[in-house]
Image 1: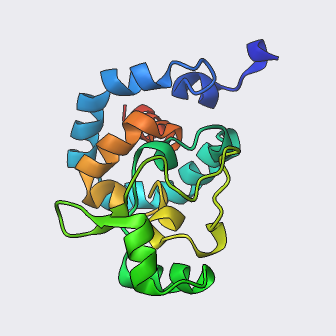
Image 2 (image 1 turned 90 degrees about the vertical axis):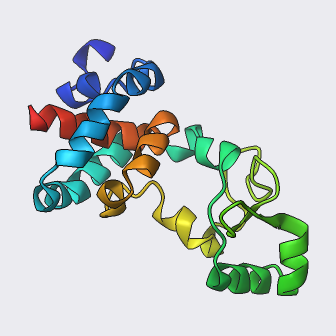
Length: 171
């Protein structure tokens, strides 16, 4: 069936397993695209590109975000998760979180303590809003925070996919 791949997969490179190398090679192109993109035009395309990316990518096969990075745990997240875990907020913070250099609460260690061996999240229903929104491929964060988008493209195949499609359509 590999010979019958549709053009989207071939362009994106997800199927050949070489996407991380391609993402590294395309960082400068992505940066230029994000800098000069027609904001409204890109924002109109994002919902469909996001859906298309996730029709081809299974996060449970990857989980690189949970294995290598941390979301910010904002006050509402801490309240919701600690309640779910039946812990005092202070105990939750002491057990799982630390303050990063920007003053945000993040996980103490990676991979995330809530990530199972099967790549499922044990607190998925109450996960932090950053986790729920990640990888931001269907919202304006992709343009508003270009440095974050560029970083995410190095480890998240969905971000890579969306940026590759935007590049292709930009030509």
